[in-house]
Image (cartoon, rainbow, N blue to C red; front, side, top):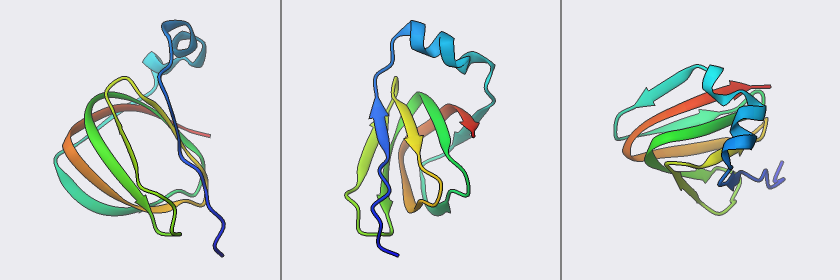
Length: 94
């Protein structure tokens, strides 16, 4: 299967974050590292601090995101995470 699964990155305003309830989502932190990851369901994450580049295993272009970004990872995505600056994020799985 070679479908390109797009990761979306946006800069949300405070009203969108409030509407999503981001502050009630759990948080997750990770030190500088590299690791493979696959998504069984869609994840939406709000990046509190850090910088990450993910590279999809399906040939898609690398995507970089960091503090203040709202990132949507589609179900079915397999990728390599490269945490370039220590990461802290809110996250929610659909």
